[in-house]
Image (cartoon, rainbow, N blue to C red; front, side, top):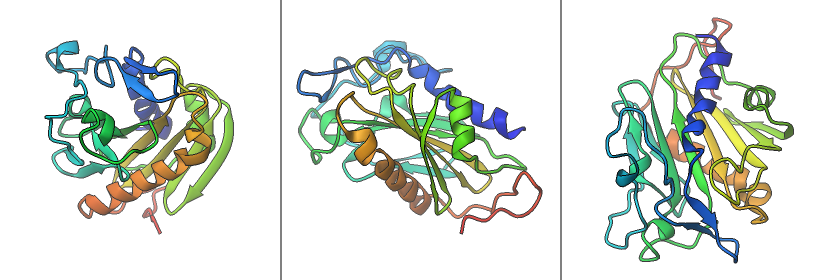
Length: 235
């Protein structure tokens, strides 16, 4: 599969979130009126809106979840948990949203952390796959690239538009990331309220921590084969 098509698939997963039900409260915090993703109806799932989580003090918090038959373990930074109603996991790919444990538990558990949603998109195994650069992420997202970072196998792109598509009142500027895990391409993104300061202050750090948690928790996988045909290396 061409690299551009593979990455487009990862970016396209966020289109499922266009009708998200999060609102920004007057104090700038993220206030889900009915779960984090009202209006999100996952492909192949049943229940539609009725299956979406509401903040619930009685619900056990989930810090990590297996995706793609356990090939990938998704976990987030300290203070962020899995919203179980957003998990999509097939034999080859998957999707997860991470959110504040404190908000998911309706304040019953979890530390106070920046109000943000972190999306993790797990691509299928590919015979040839390469880590995209920041310019490619920006081009495929059709957004201006404000800043590019790359270190330790993770590519990060700070984009000038598109961050407000996940929920009303979101900051248009947001971070995206991508990295290789074995022969899979993993896509990351973080969304936050406008004027929260999260994106330019903490967004890259939170995606870096998400990358590190996923790498540390997931089973050891075969090294990827680059698009050029040589053995990939993650350093």
